[in-house]
Length: 178
Image (tube, rainbow, N blue to C red):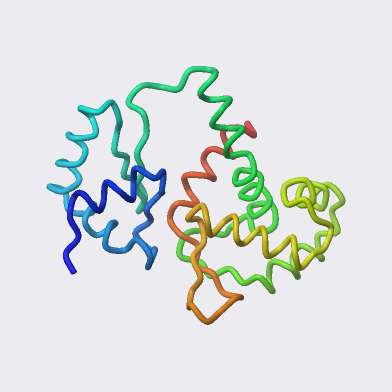
């Protein structure tokens, strides 16, 4: 099935960060990897006041001009949970990178080994639970909904592929932390 400009626009206009290593959005990523397709959509979005960004194996749409203070505050407020989740993920797995496989079972082991009260407080704050199983499920669900992780197999509840878009969020977390 050949994908067209309209289908790609529909996906990106929802705020999705499309990763080249995502099975769900593989056709969209392949379409955008072709320079002429990327350039065509870039020109269209530019006329509408947006920019098509493509870097390090992921694509997303942003406003052409920089965010003002209010927009930045709104962005951080709307994305605080995913940013906290990325910070937690990087705290437990500092070398985790796109293409890696992350298992819920490994996450639980690492989380328990850390024995960090502040880490536990962060998880409980973000996911409004004290139950470890519930916390971990909500954590992985959030990362999956934000296109950072994707189930490796539809049958597996344990293995997740780390998508290229992790770099997008990691850069934001690093810039906020510094």
